[in-house]
Image (cartoon, rainbow, N blue to C red; front, side, top):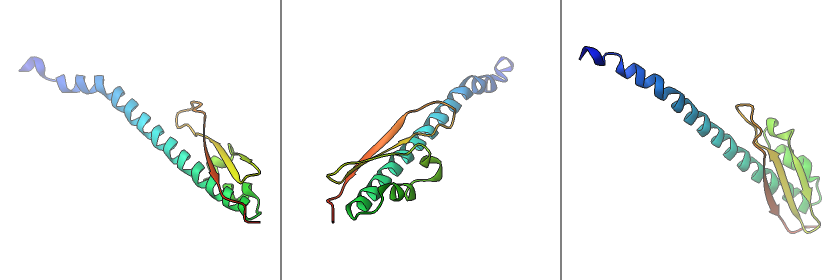
Amino acid sequence: MRAQRGQAAVELVAVFPLIVALLAALWQLAVFAHTAWSASSAAHAAARAEAIGLPPGRAARAHLPDRLERGLRLRASADGRVKVTVRVPSSFGLRLGTTSAVARFTPQR
């Protein structure tokens, strides 16, 4: 029994980095999901604004959190489609790319 004292501590030290990496990956996945949901919300708002003749950029920005506005790109087409692209923020200093969403409303003019 004496030889096994401290075994749990050694196992915890060995597994702890894996647990931290898993939690970090889950957190980043949650950030990505929130960014994708926010881009979709902004695209729908921009398409609605475009359909009634208002500036789509202002509507998109109003539906995005402040930290996502800096990476916002918006492209509107003549048929009422609006594509919103935002950068995915990283919690760990990595470049994770972008996510985008497209929405369309029939022009109401």
